[in-house]
Length: 224
Image 1 (tube, rainbow, N blue to C red):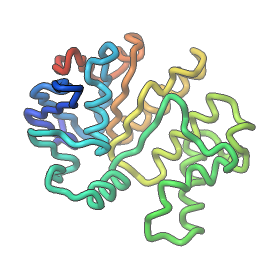
Image 2: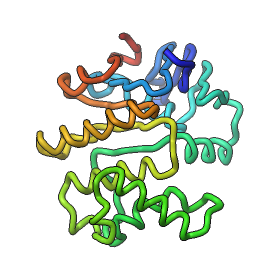
Image 3: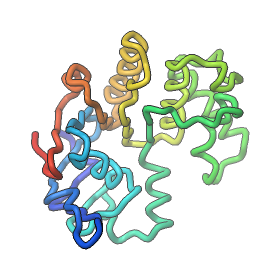
Protein backbone atom coordinates (compact mmCIF):
# COMPACT_ATOMS: atom_id res chain seq x y z
CA UNK A 1 0.00 0.00 0.00
CA UNK A 2 1.13 3.51 -0.72
CA UNK A 3 1.89 5.72 2.27
CA UNK A 4 -1.20 6.51 4.31
CA UNK A 5 -3.47 9.50 3.83
CA UNK A 6 -5.24 8.63 7.11
CA UNK A 7 -3.34 7.40 10.15
CA UNK A 8 -4.97 6.96 13.56
CA UNK A 9 -3.10 5.62 16.58
CA UNK A 10 -4.85 4.75 19.87
CA UNK A 11 -7.68 7.23 19.26
CA UNK A 12 -10.32 7.50 21.99
CA UNK A 13 -13.52 9.52 22.17
CA UNK A 14 -15.80 10.02 25.18
CA UNK A 15 -19.22 11.67 25.29
CA UNK A 16 -20.74 12.86 28.58
CA UNK A 17 -24.09 11.31 29.43
CA UNK A 18 -25.61 12.43 32.70
CA UNK A 19 -23.23 11.57 35.52
CA UNK A 20 -21.23 9.17 33.41
CA UNK A 21 -19.68 9.08 29.94
CA UNK A 22 -19.92 6.89 26.87
CA UNK A 23 -16.64 5.52 25.49
CA UNK A 24 -17.54 5.94 21.81
CA UNK A 25 -14.12 5.03 20.36
CA UNK A 26 -11.73 2.69 22.16
CA UNK A 27 -8.04 2.77 21.20
CA UNK A 28 -8.78 2.86 17.47
CA UNK A 29 -5.84 2.18 15.16
CA UNK A 30 -6.44 2.69 11.45
CA UNK A 31 -4.27 3.28 8.40
CA UNK A 32 -5.83 4.05 5.01
CA UNK A 33 -3.75 4.37 1.85
CA UNK A 34 -4.03 6.77 -1.07
CA UNK A 35 -6.57 5.45 -3.57
CA UNK A 36 -7.90 2.79 -1.22
CA UNK A 37 -11.63 2.01 -1.21
CA UNK A 38 -12.62 1.19 2.38
CA UNK A 39 -16.05 0.07 3.60
CA UNK A 40 -17.07 0.85 7.18
CA UNK A 41 -19.77 -1.37 8.69
CA UNK A 42 -21.34 -1.78 12.10
CA UNK A 43 -24.70 -1.62 13.87
CA UNK A 44 -26.26 1.65 15.05
CA UNK A 45 -24.41 2.99 18.07
CA UNK A 46 -21.24 1.07 17.19
CA UNK A 47 -19.08 4.18 16.82
CA UNK A 48 -18.83 4.37 13.05
CA UNK A 49 -20.44 7.83 12.88
CA UNK A 50 -18.04 9.07 15.57
CA UNK A 51 -15.15 7.58 13.63
CA UNK A 52 -16.22 9.28 10.40
CA UNK A 53 -16.79 12.62 12.16
CA UNK A 54 -13.26 12.55 13.54
CA UNK A 55 -11.77 11.49 10.21
CA UNK A 56 -13.78 14.26 8.53
CA UNK A 57 -12.42 16.83 11.02
CA UNK A 58 -15.93 17.57 12.28
CA UNK A 59 -15.02 16.33 15.77
CA UNK A 60 -11.85 15.91 17.81
CA UNK A 61 -10.50 12.80 19.54
CA UNK A 62 -10.01 13.09 23.30
CA UNK A 63 -6.64 11.41 23.06
CA UNK A 64 -4.49 9.49 20.61
CA UNK A 65 -2.91 10.68 17.37
CA UNK A 66 -4.56 11.43 14.05
CA UNK A 67 -2.61 12.30 10.90
CA UNK A 68 -4.50 13.50 7.83
CA UNK A 69 -2.46 13.85 4.63
CA UNK A 70 0.72 14.11 6.67
CA UNK A 71 -0.62 16.75 9.09
CA UNK A 72 -1.03 16.05 12.81
CA UNK A 73 -4.60 17.21 13.32
CA UNK A 74 -4.64 17.56 17.11
CA UNK A 75 -2.30 20.56 17.00
CA UNK A 76 -4.50 22.59 14.63
CA UNK A 77 -6.83 25.38 15.69
CA UNK A 78 -10.40 25.58 14.39
CA UNK A 79 -9.54 27.74 11.37
CA UNK A 80 -6.65 25.46 10.38
CA UNK A 81 -8.86 22.39 10.74
CA UNK A 82 -11.54 24.01 8.62
CA UNK A 83 -8.99 24.87 5.93
CA UNK A 84 -7.57 21.35 5.91
CA UNK A 85 -11.07 19.85 5.76
CA UNK A 86 -12.09 22.09 2.85
CA UNK A 87 -8.93 21.23 0.91
CA UNK A 88 -8.63 17.52 1.69
CA UNK A 89 -12.09 16.01 2.28
CA UNK A 90 -15.25 15.71 0.21
CA UNK A 91 -18.50 14.63 1.86
CA UNK A 92 -21.38 12.67 0.30
CA UNK A 93 -24.55 12.13 2.35
CA UNK A 94 -27.55 9.83 2.02
CA UNK A 95 -29.93 12.82 2.03
CA UNK A 96 -27.98 14.75 -0.67
CA UNK A 97 -28.02 18.04 1.38
CA UNK A 98 -28.51 20.25 -1.67
CA UNK A 99 -29.90 23.79 -1.69
CA UNK A 100 -33.35 23.29 -3.28
CA UNK A 101 -33.55 26.66 -5.09
CA UNK A 102 -29.99 26.72 -6.41
CA UNK A 103 -29.00 25.18 -9.72
CA UNK A 104 -26.80 22.09 -9.85
CA UNK A 105 -23.94 24.37 -10.88
CA UNK A 106 -24.42 26.69 -7.89
CA UNK A 107 -24.70 23.76 -5.48
CA UNK A 108 -21.40 22.37 -6.72
CA UNK A 109 -19.70 25.77 -6.50
CA UNK A 110 -20.46 26.08 -2.76
CA UNK A 111 -17.32 24.37 -1.38
CA UNK A 112 -15.20 26.84 -3.37
CA UNK A 113 -16.79 29.89 -1.74
CA UNK A 114 -13.91 30.49 0.65
CA UNK A 115 -11.13 29.78 -1.79
CA UNK A 116 -9.20 32.57 -3.43
CA UNK A 117 -10.72 32.09 -6.89
CA UNK A 118 -12.61 34.37 -9.22
CA UNK A 119 -16.22 33.38 -9.83
CA UNK A 120 -15.54 32.31 -13.41
CA UNK A 121 -12.97 29.77 -12.20
CA UNK A 122 -15.37 28.43 -9.57
CA UNK A 123 -18.01 28.06 -12.26
CA UNK A 124 -15.60 26.29 -14.59
CA UNK A 125 -14.54 23.88 -11.84
CA UNK A 126 -18.19 23.11 -11.03
CA UNK A 127 -19.00 22.44 -14.68
CA UNK A 128 -16.03 20.06 -15.01
CA UNK A 129 -17.13 18.18 -11.90
CA UNK A 130 -20.72 17.90 -13.14
CA UNK A 131 -19.54 16.68 -16.52
CA UNK A 132 -17.36 14.10 -14.77
CA UNK A 133 -20.45 12.56 -13.12
CA UNK A 134 -22.51 12.63 -16.31
CA UNK A 135 -24.58 15.77 -15.69
CA UNK A 136 -23.08 18.07 -18.32
CA UNK A 137 -26.56 18.72 -19.73
CA UNK A 138 -28.29 19.28 -16.36
CA UNK A 139 -26.20 22.08 -14.85
CA UNK A 140 -28.98 24.69 -14.83
CA UNK A 141 -31.57 22.40 -13.25
CA UNK A 142 -32.52 22.77 -9.59
CA UNK A 143 -32.66 19.68 -7.34
CA UNK A 144 -36.47 19.64 -7.61
CA UNK A 145 -36.07 19.11 -11.37
CA UNK A 146 -33.70 16.16 -10.93
CA UNK A 147 -34.21 12.50 -10.09
CA UNK A 148 -32.81 11.01 -6.90
CA UNK A 149 -29.88 9.54 -8.77
CA UNK A 150 -29.15 12.86 -10.46
CA UNK A 151 -29.27 14.66 -7.11
CA UNK A 152 -26.74 12.23 -5.69
CA UNK A 153 -24.53 12.84 -8.73
CA UNK A 154 -24.70 16.56 -7.98
CA UNK A 155 -23.69 15.76 -4.39
CA UNK A 156 -20.75 13.73 -5.67
CA UNK A 157 -19.71 16.55 -8.00
CA UNK A 158 -19.88 18.94 -5.03
CA UNK A 159 -17.63 16.57 -3.05
CA UNK A 160 -15.17 16.39 -5.96
CA UNK A 161 -14.98 20.02 -7.01
CA UNK A 162 -12.22 21.05 -4.63
CA UNK A 163 -9.95 18.17 -5.62
CA UNK A 164 -9.99 16.38 -2.23
CA UNK A 165 -7.78 13.38 -1.58
CA UNK A 166 -10.44 11.72 0.61
CA UNK A 167 -14.13 11.13 -0.11
CA UNK A 168 -16.33 10.25 2.88
CA UNK A 169 -19.60 8.69 1.68
CA UNK A 170 -22.28 8.02 4.31
CA UNK A 171 -24.88 5.56 2.94
CA UNK A 172 -24.77 7.31 -0.46
CA UNK A 173 -27.12 4.78 -2.08
CA UNK A 174 -29.56 4.54 0.83
CA UNK A 175 -32.31 6.59 -0.84
CA UNK A 176 -31.82 5.16 -4.32
CA UNK A 177 -33.20 2.20 -6.25
CA UNK A 178 -30.89 -0.73 -6.97
CA UNK A 179 -29.93 0.26 -10.52
CA UNK A 180 -29.25 3.89 -9.64
CA UNK A 181 -27.33 2.82 -6.55
CA UNK A 182 -25.12 0.62 -8.73
CA UNK A 183 -24.39 3.61 -10.99
CA UNK A 184 -23.37 5.72 -7.97
CA UNK A 185 -21.10 2.92 -6.70
CA UNK A 186 -19.46 2.73 -10.12
CA UNK A 187 -18.63 6.44 -9.91
CA UNK A 188 -17.12 5.98 -6.44
CA UNK A 189 -15.00 3.05 -7.62
CA UNK A 190 -13.78 5.12 -10.57
CA UNK A 191 -12.69 7.85 -8.15
CA UNK A 192 -10.71 5.29 -6.17
CA UNK A 193 -9.07 3.94 -9.33
CA UNK A 194 -8.02 7.51 -10.16
CA UNK A 195 -6.21 7.86 -6.82
CA UNK A 196 -8.79 9.32 -4.45
CA UNK A 197 -9.35 7.53 -1.15
CA UNK A 198 -12.99 6.56 -0.63
CA UNK A 199 -14.47 5.62 2.74
CA UNK A 200 -17.99 4.22 2.44
CA UNK A 201 -20.33 3.79 5.42
CA UNK A 202 -22.89 1.14 4.55
CA UNK A 203 -25.24 -1.40 6.11
CA UNK A 204 -25.30 -3.37 2.85
CA UNK A 205 -22.83 -6.30 2.89
CA UNK A 206 -23.03 -6.64 -0.90
CA UNK A 207 -21.84 -3.05 -1.36
CA UNK A 208 -19.15 -3.54 1.27
CA UNK A 209 -17.85 -6.62 -0.52
CA UNK A 210 -16.94 -4.47 -3.54
CA UNK A 211 -14.47 -2.47 -1.44
CA UNK A 212 -10.73 -3.15 -1.20
CA UNK A 213 -11.13 -3.69 2.52
CA UNK A 214 -13.89 -3.83 5.14
CA UNK A 215 -13.59 -2.60 8.70
CA UNK A 216 -16.27 -3.22 11.32
CA UNK A 217 -17.10 -1.04 14.31
CA UNK A 218 -18.72 -2.65 17.35
CA UNK A 219 -19.08 -1.02 20.77
CA UNK A 220 -16.41 1.53 19.87
CA UNK A 221 -13.87 -1.11 18.89
CA UNK A 222 -12.56 -1.40 15.34
CA UNK A 223 -11.95 -4.82 13.79
CA UNK A 224 -11.00 -5.99 10.29
